[in-house]
Image (cartoon, rainbow, N blue to C red; front, side, top):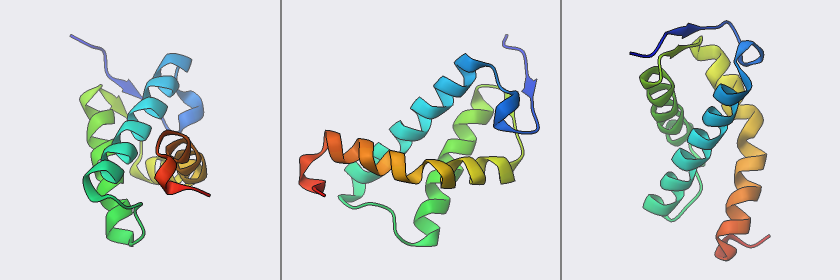
Length: 93
């Protein structure tokens, strides 16, 4: 059984947890693109990605405030798009 990790912000996470979370967020963002053939634009599309990410974090027994997850997602959007553009050349510049 995994231990529950409760933190107030991402800075409090262990490096491996931060790495895992970055990977999960990219995978969820990538899955959204593959399923929809488009980047998220509308607020409800971003909310769906955040909801999936939050669920994944909770499955790994990490408790972090929803506001922190929202801030993390917002801070990573540009890097997520850049990474997708490298993987999917049809996105172009």
